[in-house]
Image 1 (spheres, rainbow, N blue to C red):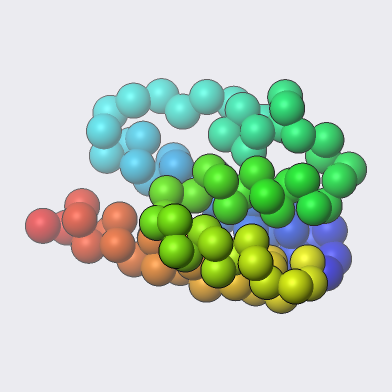
Image 2 (cartoon, rainbow, N blue to C red):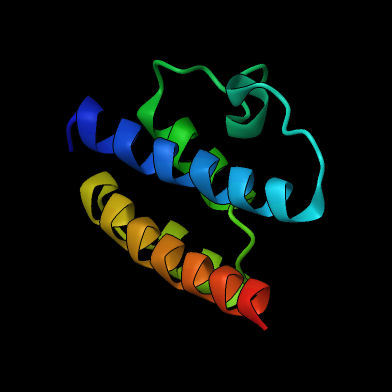
Length: 96
């Protein structure tokens, strides 16, 4: 897993929250707040993945599937898949 791959997933998380905030007519806090960086050490990849999994609005089973994945690289892939599902669900909800 590279820093660029993790950054890409972080960008997608922020974009998801920006989409939700725009639909609700609210202002999103700073990127660092959305990603949990006041609490999470940005240099710790494991903490960053955990924080992202905790912040994405997905169900507990999906979150467990992400966090129970053995390697960080596989966890990142699974988080990306979960993010795809959540983004599709949000777009569907906003289109109806």
